[in-house]
Length: 245
Ligand SMILES: [Zn+2]
Image (cartoon, rainbow, N blue to C red; front, side, top):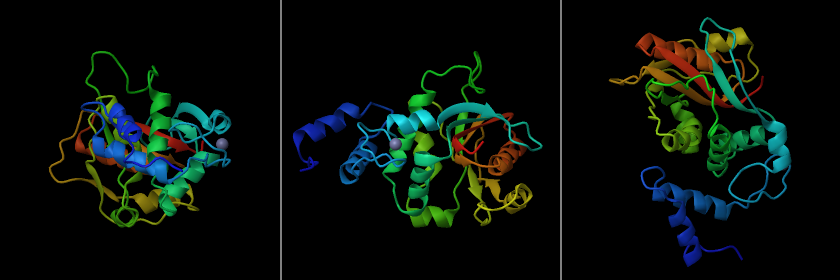
């Protein structure tokens, strides 16, 4: 029998995980309920996964390939990716996008956070400069409403809060776009041209980490970065959970 939420040890586990000023009690309760209702299996190989992570050790070892790269484009945007967009990571993001697997999101967030924790030499790190703000690439409002959650926000907000980086959802989509799958690089660029704008009255940081769940050609990040730069952000860096290259 699964432990009920009303049992004291479950309550104590929630309370123990709530850290003042970082993770809210509601968020922890929500995650705990998701953990209880969805038995944890690795989305890459269906093996049981211990703890509150997403991947089994074998799938993680294969998919975890953190590295920086610069997508082709007019902006020299340094992008950092954590995982390869394959296997269990691809299945989990697909599940969160199309089959309502919201429970994968806190697990993806924890996987990413664990990799970045304590890592040095990141493009946005440097001494004596203000910490950058984290700006999520906005989801199409229709898709967000249909899902009931926003994937980049669910993945990157906990990491930003944990690292005391401002989380600023200042971008919005101003027109619908086609899904990017199956389009060529040029078609992707055309599809996204002019689709982002700044929210009315948005206060912009000097430096920003533009965060998205998936990067294929980099067109989305480049288009969003262009809007931030035009708005006055002097340095923009990209951070993606998973990329194909
Ligand atoms: Zn696995």
